[in-house]
Length: 505
Image 1: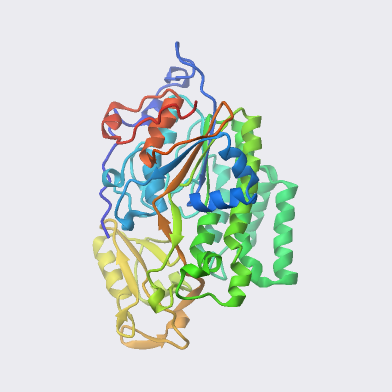
Image 2: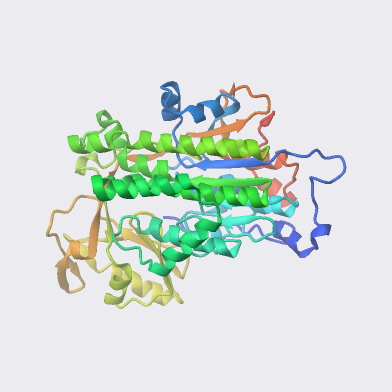
């Protein structure tokens, strides 16, 4: 895996936050500059990895009326990613490229936690510097900003950035703990965390409809079938929308993003049940019955969310832009070994303590992976050696990737199902594999595909499909053109994307 090779784009001439050093009245504001025309607000919906083919099929079948309504009033594009190697076909890379207008080759952001630590200008900072109010509601791998009239909610996998305004942290902390430990029985949250979360929600937009959905879901799990727990994934989108609407109505940002990952999660987990004919390893009849419509469920829930977004946009005289960055397809690579399985450490802090590892922080990232940070390179090397001592059938249990001299990414590299009891060695002693690791129920069955959606709602109300593809790198310059903002000259020289002609016509 490559190290982070991010280019420093924050000299004074390129740092859009330098505008905050001036009094508000002295900041450049394109909306009030002579000769410029006011631009309508934009709500940018980042529905991660929705698939053009599935959207088309289910719109034709009448399953997605709100997607159909948006589709019929938008410029319709298929996007290309900025990489060719599938190794870099990851959403936290592609969304970062879209937000900054820089290709992976230029920004070098490889890990989910790298973005907040990098110094690249992005769409929010560029618009803030031009005097616009902006909102970021969970966009992936994005750095914090704190500006008057703007709000920032980190993505659920981020623990390095604080939300802004500060009271948003009650929401983020609770959600992050549940997302990062969604496969674990314990999130580490106490009654105080629940109280803060509920207290925040009731004063920041929680609706009776969302409360009813939560109670219905919990009641189904308790009284009907505990296995229906998988449907909880849609509740986060509902809660996040309530909070999003609260800040949209109170702050009235000119540009805001809303990120949702529920469909991507369901596709990764249940494509095998949706299209069993595509796979060598067949899901059981029981699983096909239970999960066969799981992905359709996710799309229909997102369709309902889109309907609420469209009503909110109409209320705010805003336009919708819908993007997916990439999409998914069947994952067939490990069919020969029964599909790709994931194992995760039960209690990571306890394992690190038992191994005598000294570290500064440990942070869950995706599925089975963690990031460790250290005070020295020597401490990192010692930790890697101790983690490497875990062996199963003579093979190293953990795989490693490093970002810098003080960080280490690692995760369980066991991909095949391990019947109990599987025995492993830790240094010179033997222990049960299942005592340290637990099996994540869903076998991976969806993988990333480079095609993405980009729909830009039109002012004329008629659909305009386009045969020519656009790049995800075209999104930033197109948005800046809509808001009549010029990027710093140094950034203009580096951006490979172009303004999409008549995108908002």
